[in-house]
Length: 118
Image 1 (cartoon, one colour):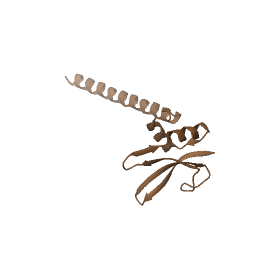
Image 2 (tube, helix red, strand yellow):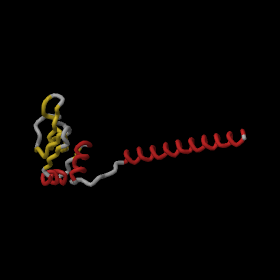
Image 3 (cartoon, helix red, strand yellow):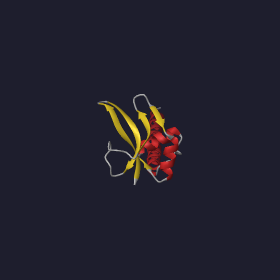
C-alpha cells in the first residue's frame, strides 16, 4: 500500500519535512517513490504539488493523520470528521451538561439555605 507521509530532514531541533509517497513498509527517511511537497512547522510554510497529490490520491494512496491535516488546510481534501472526533465531542458535551447540572443544584441548595435562615 502506498502511504503519503512526512519525511524529516534538517538540523537537530530545526526539523523540516518533505511530503512524500512511499511504500507503507519502508523506513520514515528511506527512499520515496515521489516527493510531493514541503512543510516547515516553525514558519508554517507549506508547498504542495496539487496535481501529483490528486493523482496519488486517485490511485488509492492513504495519507497519515498529519498529512491529512495539511491537505485539508491546503484545500486538496475535504475536511472529514472522523468517528473518534464525534465520540470525543459527545463526551465533552455530556460532561458540560453534568457540570452545569451539578452547579445549578448547588445554587438551588444555597438559595434554600439562605431563605430558611431569614
